[in-house]
Length: 291
Image (cartoon, rainbow, N blue to C red; front, side, top):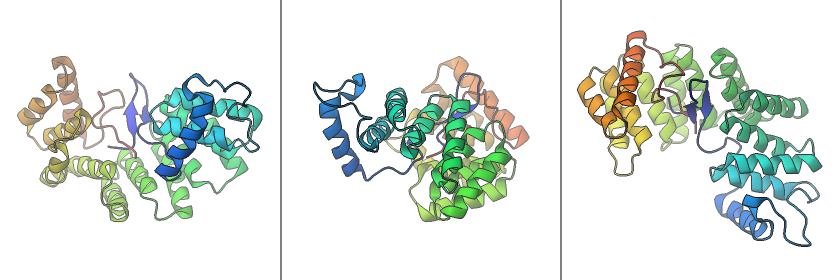
């Protein structure tokens, strides 16, 4: 399902996509990033002559903004370096800890990310984004614990569609597909265009044996001109679980080499047989995805 949860090679799934921590409005974030980058040279982490580095502000705000911007730009390694630099001067800055935890999650360093999320929650127990982050790093190994973390976050922010989507992932991993469906639908009520929740809902319906409903939901997204390979793979998963194996194989073959397409089909068929998500080591289309 779609959590930003992406598998690593033979390992647990990871959060993919935009970082979980609510970001400043995009235009404001771009202005901050542009002002700081003009002097700091973000990619090299080098300060301009005579100017302080990103962690030298009174509260580390510049470094935090840069770390968040790098993460949103798809550069978790750069975000991690910026967060570490800020934390060297401000060890308990929640924003820097959050940026580092999210960067570590994106890089697959889940144990280190868990340590940061737990540290944030010791300092500030009512931090909903940290609870969601803690849930995400728990999904592969302990979906019940992840469910607890997501429900704790929703007690603080009950109308958060991202937490509702992630809760659905945990419930699906526990085999509680009807409850997962309800959680995805709540997320879509709050954010109707949320692609991750739409894909997750379709996959969940397919795992319940409701292939026609799943195909009807996912086909418009997967056949749109801007649909990417990952979305087409998710559609192939739904088709395969609905018994349309030839069509699923045809779609997979447009994006994947034959051995990978065959491995993906095997994972889909295993999921259909067990009515559960594909193994974490499978090629990935059935792994849930967060926003």
